Figure 1 (spheres, rainbow, N blue to C red):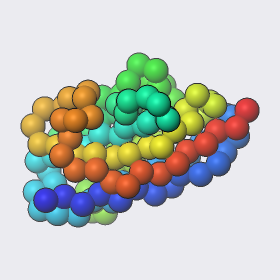
Figure 2 (figure 1 turned 45 degrees about the vertical axis):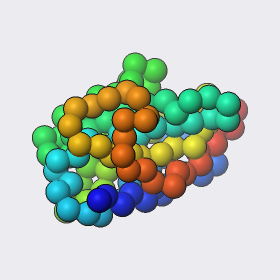
Figure 3 (figure 1 turned 90 degrees about the vertical axis):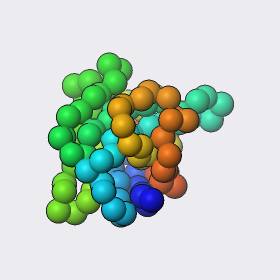
Length: 123
């Protein structure tokens, strides 16, 4: 079992930066892939980025490449999503999620979820 808790969301202006945190607890974290997803009302959850906790290997979705980076701090059992040059279209609820095995884009393949944190970017 893994427990996840996001923090760091808020209201910012276009061009600003935010860093989201996903604090994890549980055993065997190095066996997990952690993904950041985002969701706006009426749409499915969209994969933003993933990181293999053990190796640190990352994937970042094309739409946010160059603006968003994902990283982890093993000592703090925390995964971060650094978001720079934010745009109004980045407005969403951001979730972190975890699964074992390979990276998958589909949200329903992830077993553990945090409660989400709202990010609002004003123009």
